[in-house]
Structure formats: C-alpha cells, structure tokens
Length: 194
Image 1 (tube, one colour):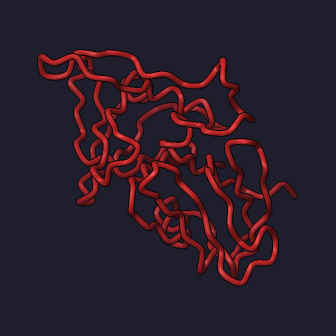
Image 2: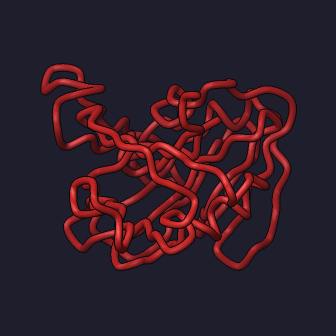
C-alpha cells in the first residue's frame, strides 16, 4: 500500500521515475470559462499499487468528504501552483466534480493520494492514522529519484512531510541515522518489503 504525494508525481524534479524527456506536463483545460493549466490525476494514481476501483473518498482541507466513482476520480485534473500555500482544486467537468481545497483521497484499496502545499506540515503519524494504517509498523519512504530508506515505527511517529516554498515536498524523521533522517522530493510512503 502507498500514500502518494500528489505534487511530486506531477513535478518530479530529479530523474528517476521520470526523465527530462518524460517529465509530467500540464494540460490546458477549460475551468469555469477560462483556460487554465492543470495536471491529470493519472500522474498520481499511476503510483498506487492497488489501482483505483469502486468509490474514492475525497477530503477537503476542512474535513468535508465527497464520494467519487473511481473512473470519475481518475479522469479528474488537479489545478495547482507548486509554490503556493493554496490547496489545489480537483476538477472533472464531465462528472460535475469540483473539490476546492483538496487535501487527500482514500481508495477502497487502502491507499491515499495527499496534497502537500507550500509551507504546510503533515505529521507522518497523522497521515498513517487517516489511512487507517498500522502506526506500529516500519514503512519505506521513496524519493522521485528512487532513493529510499526504511523508517522504523518510532521514527514514523515523530516524522513530518513538509511542503517548501520552492514547491518541493520533503520528509524529515528526527533522530533517524540514515541520510540524517531527511529525504527530499518524496513521491510515496509504502509498506516496507518484508
């Protein structure tokens, strides 16, 4: 299972999952009568292990939920600015879907897509709890260049995922020895391979 960081699936600043030639690009869509740049949500859902089926529960920043059919969710776009503290809009005109202040979405398969905006801090323990994941387990954190390390439960309990003003989304785990407990440009958190 994975918690996918939406912004880094759409930005991917370091070669790894994408190269300079295959880096994600925005599409131009019509949003309330204006042409805007938006990123297909499939850039994020492609990193889910279990795919998207059934119904997806979408949460906004205030905690309000919207249930969306999997096909409508995958066909949506994210309208966002990477260096902004304003939460993105999740939009699919054909499905009459518009979720302002998109925070995260939970799939029936037990995975999540998280929005991490500039200057925001997300305790990893809270992210695991929101996904109904076991907070007493070790997880693996993976960056856009595919560098990764396992994070024991005691470090996940005090860790953070942080949005920076440059648009990068990084992780920090105090008192963890590997890479000084810091990993830049994370793309997902997943179950450790056993």
